[in-house]
Image (cartoon, rainbow, N blue to C red; front, side, top):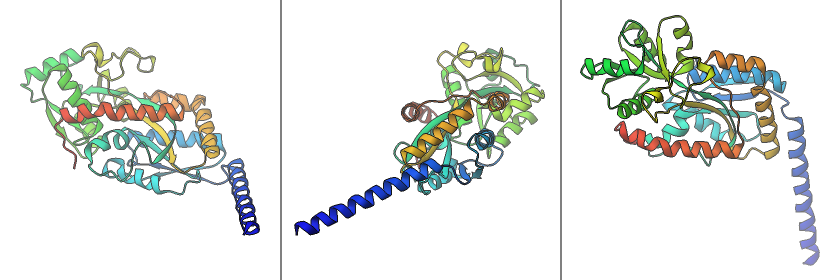
Amino acid sequence: MQVTRSLTFLLLAALGIGATQTATAASQEYPSRPIRLIIPNAAGSSVDTLGRIFANTMTQVGGQQIVVDNRGGAGGLIGMEIGKDAIADGYTLVSASTAAMVIGPHLHKKLPFDPLKDYAFISLFGNTPNILVVNPSIPVKTVKELLDYNKSRGGKANMASAGVGAQSHLAGVMFLNMAKSEALHVPYKGGGASVAAVVAGESQWTITPAPAVAGLIKGGKLRAIAHSLPAKTALLGDLPSISETVPGFQYGGWNGLLAPIKTSKPILAKVREMLVKTSQNAEFRRLFEQQMTEVVTNTPEEFRKFVEEEIKAMGPVVKAAGLQPF
């Protein structure tokens, strides 16, 4: 009996050593083939634009092609679930953002994933302000003038959003509540449609992610009034913060990199190393600046804590919007 136990122990130990050596070899060779980057948003969205800039630069840094896989739908839930269930070998990563990770838990009774438990957190890579924009034909150039305009229209000025529960909807609700103003919420099918409605004059204003309107602002088709960061930033020049008129207002978006939860620590470390190098790339920073987005990085622990706090902070906003989980 003792001999049998000894042989069993030696066999298990040998298998353990073999598995460790295999994992170590895999991490040393990583990446040895193309990496899939799931973007849980439709092609052409602001999150997609930033994710593709990130993927293209990280391709150069890592020496392997980063292949973008758009899996939009259900507010990002479909793509996030696919990422959660992917093989945890480092060859599937997820470009996560606010909608599914922060808003989703408040809108769905049963999420197909747990935002804090089902993923390995790697790092943030972008911080995106929302921009308050108006149709250039209306006589509004400041936040105060917009509030006066809303009042003059009896609360009937159209505030466009990408849909009920979208970031643009919740940002608008927060803005109106904090400013004690009123407007008519007009939800559209997606951010592109809502922005197009403001350009066309069908709606008068919206608060939307900066990348979605950067080109339209420069082209004079939209007028930028203010941004949603807590204070002025060199990234946006002289554009004021909404908080200068509505104290305490802050509502931004973010982009971060996740992996399936069982991805090995050595591979996660290599992915993060590539991400940090990407964030330091001059062309990457220039392209993000064009999209009015700050390049940021943090530790996996800081990233997880950040998301946890964002989820908690979103609760009162969703409640103020009168939304019930379904």
